[in-house]
Image (cartoon, rainbow, N blue to C red; front, side):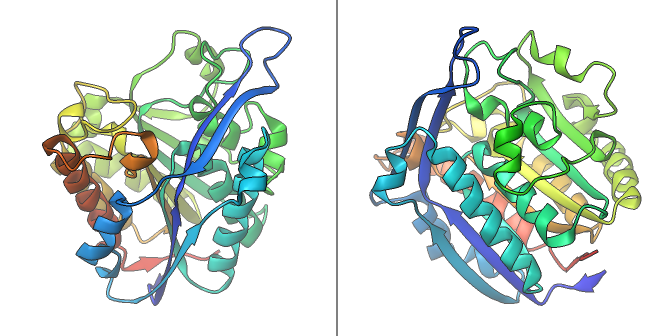
Length: 318
């Protein structure tokens, strides 16, 4: 365990809405893809103005990732973005820095995981804590919508879409015995079929809301692994706190419980990489007006980022 001495922040400015086919003939083919850059004003600019990335008290290296127009026009643009994220995460870790990825959606998470795998190698026991209102455990055969954003966690764990996983060096996949999902209060009916007989740990909303219980569960996982990847989809909180997100879900944890539980994970000292998705609401077409809804969402985003960064005092490089 090493004291945090540097932080690499990677901002994903590309909106992503990628869909696979939903018929037997098109399930494994991208039939609609949209990756584009949204003009200012942007929520990420608000985060800069607040100085939230500097709350760790260490040198911060900041990079915005963009795809050029020749790539975004392709159906395979999501693979290009995944490779780019993997490269940047891997390099940050090899440079001896912890890495924080923010913006975008959960579609970028396989790239983050691939960068970790490439930097630390196949023998490192890497745990993953996935905080999300949704399971993101679909595969093409079970997804009712074909939305790629419902498949990244399954891909990281090797359940499907091997091309996506291998495109970013995520080989082998993360082991589900070192994986924790919470609160996952919104599952597709067929999604559960993908996790039967798996060792994946699922912590429901009530257990997540019990911080003592959460401390025991998260601590147990941290003890079993060499390093941790913490991924958060902002929609894990009740929609009251995030009205501008594209996939709001009611009946979730409040923002203060999420902040406390993030602190608990960060203070294990095992987190080498963290990512926070769905805090860039402009990318989802919701943030053009600076209205009360968006201001509430921006405040929640600032709180989530701060709870990660300000509690990141140490990390592990296997």
